[in-house]
Image 1: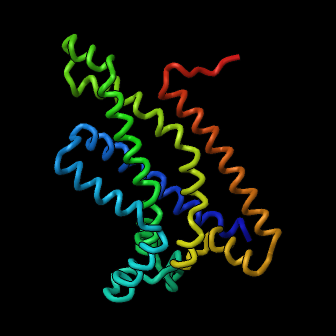
Image 2 (image 1 turned 30 degrees about the horizontal axis):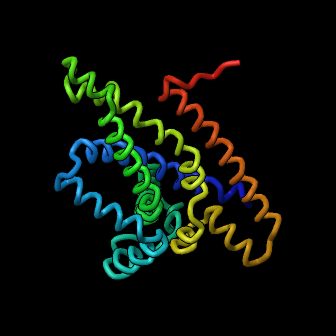
Length: 234
């Protein structure tokens, strides 16, 4: 039962993970470089508003507006009822992505804001450090000093956050899966708690524990890659 639902949650978790890091790091970089500008202020307002809204509240809003009233997207589910009737792989992928857009927005909102602001604050802290001033004073162009020195050091907090992000994205929010009727382990866990199916609940808890352990190991590896002061040895 868990094995059937797990790939669905892993799909949403993996998509959310890569999209979030792919957007958050460049956005945090440009916010730090353009600190105090209109771009920085406007994006900060949008980020904080999104962070303040729970994902399930955003989900209800998206379903009401874009699925029910405008009918641009489906009400929920992982795939459509006619998924098996599609003849080509491309049509099946299109159907999956069409169903995934609204849930992915809900998944992205929370940790996306945290990653972006962490990246911005870390880069700003490094830009004000003495070693950056020294590099610029010696004639190194500002953009090159940022890319070669400050940026790598700014990625250390992002790397240490890797494990928690992986657990959140892979296990997801059971409320989002309930709202969108996604057959993942979040919805399975919710149904198991309601029906008091404790073996399934314990299995889901065990999977979460394993993912947290794997995420922490990957966090340590990422920190070692980004921080030259960290080395593995006997």
